[in-house]
Length: 394
Image (cartoon, rainbow, N blue to C red; front, side, top):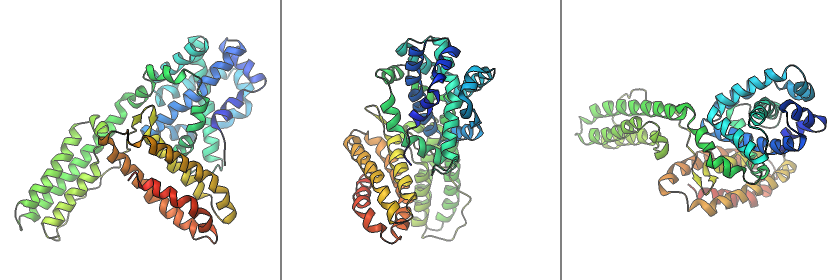
């Protein structure tokens, strides 16, 4: 189902609602309309980045808890006594999800670009936040075809990137970049760095436990296995001590533990030694910006679009209907191919791993769709080249 989230949010302020919003903010209709046109895509862009930074968990919880009934009476919200309560709620949500620094930067940019007052701009952001979350909630939980979890939320937002970008007024993105808007979101409270550091520590401990067990087993065949596994454990330990820097280096922790396991099996002759629990927490691969394009977001949008298209196929007719969406995904892959060579070599491994993990989920879904009579002949000419192009990133 095709929709434009920017237009849906802005559409809540049609008719008399725009004048009511201006009166609430103390601004004339022209400035209010211009500010609304900048604030909605700016806010959605920030929410998309915040969601991708932590896998969508924080934003999903906020969306799930949002009372979306306010969408049914926007006029009453803007003119009634509840407006101050909603604005207080929105201000708190902005601070917790985007961070006060990023929220302030967005409000300042909208104010500078449109001439609306700084206080009015901040108030606009606060009133918009619950409305945006309410609209997103209706799409995720209202039978829009999205999984009702953080992954479904990410799929929705990443699938709207083109609409958000197209709605950005000229000059807004430059102002946000100058203000460090996205950096402020990424660094919100150090939460991402702390989470990754903790996960790295857990991986280091897991690798250390493996090293101990493998070292004991290796005593039967020499010290070579113990040294090999200890080396992997030390690498994981170094990753743990790097904290936030670990995000920047894209160190694949799970791969380190896998190397430790492999070294133990190879050099000990795969002796039957019981290993301690070595579960490794999953790590959200960070995004890489190349020429203003967020490569991580691009990959998420590509697979989100492909998954949405394929998941709706139940017969040959729905397969035909899915072809344009899959062709659009192929176009995005072609666009990514054009800038892939500019991705720093040190970052390609993690991004390739992200593509690979998504391919492991997409391929079985496509195989299942192709089992439906007549579907393979319809999808084959589109999905065959698409998969080949995606594999080039692995």
